[in-house]
Length: 535
Image (tube, rainbow, N blue to C red; front, side):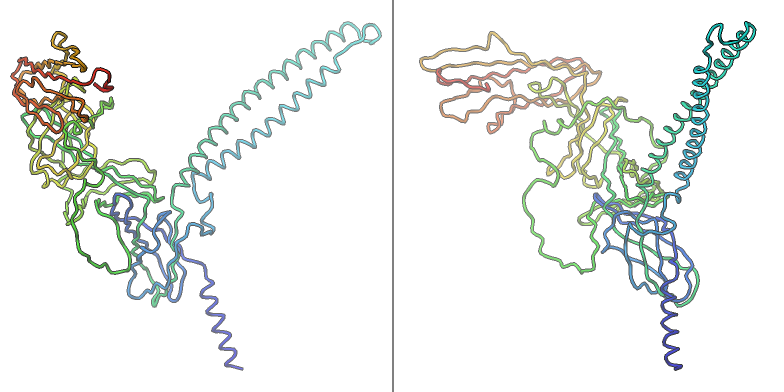
């Protein structure tokens, strides 16, 4: 009998242990390693644990995470028996009333609605009173039995009372309008607070733990979430073509994990997050020819300048007093680059772009102007940067500020195969370029069964700057893909000819105030009963 009693007592004791209320704790984010598509979050949760087995619910974790990447660190006296992630855990803490802002707005709306109901009752009563007065004000002449004095008093009473009640109704209508306006305003605030509460964390980790000694316990929590990203971008500033380019290396970070990152140490990585329990196997590494990932390779410089966008948004001109390079550690691995930033940042969970400055660089550059007047009458300033690999640049957009003016955007691609990195610094309106067709040197001739068309163009360049410049000028003549069509380049004015592309290039120095003219001429001969659509 004693054995049965002891066995039942053990069952009750065990059931009581597991039926105890869960212990809640809130995780605090200490640091985050952000990848191009994802982030590894490091959090800490502190709580008091009794001895024995407990259920621990850790709140304020990401709404979406990769469950197989969850790692829980605990002291040696605590054993974590199981970990479960959920966004559907319901408790007395998980109601709208747990958000004080939402509760305050709800209470205000309820109070206004009660006031509105009393006001409508009062207005309805006054309206019925007027209706009663209107129905009982009729007097039927001499048979009414009223004297003149009594009739006069009655009329005065009716007029005064009706006017008084009508004025009261007008006052109530104004109050009603104000209450309705306040309710609409509070409802909009409620919608905002509710949408905000939807973006905050609903993720929870449910732990089954066993503790050998009661006391305070710190849990280290680590996991991957895909609800964060970053991309590099740059600010380029050049005061003139004789000094190095000042570059501010920045990161645009977004996250909507549901957890606001406050005073968090950031590490930004160009690699791909990979956390699993399977040990990696190293395989043979085969090199292949091909364009760099995410970049459309082209040999012509025209594609370098095509990224310029003449946008009107102004870029800030203030310079950072303290260099961010002093607070950023750059680690270059074989396949990726990481930036560890010592300055804590606040990154709210709103999926908005947050700008983080990482490094300040000075890029020694050789400046050259570039123009293709057939396509664009403007001259572009290009900066040539050699030995650019040491700057740990990543592909990204850049805002360009030249001579104190915002000139647009360009794209930096350090994955180029060329030895020199070309940065487009925008258009320079002080370089005037005109390309015009010479009428007396152009025309059409008919030779027997053939038609011959001649084309001559003069390109005039003027340097209106107070300093000399170096300019690369390009034009072209057509190429034939049909044996019936023959093309002859008759004049190139000293330009270099690429016979495979038909592109002619001139490189020259243009002094301040100097004007230079270049000429290109060619002939196209083809059967006269045919036509060329793109000539």
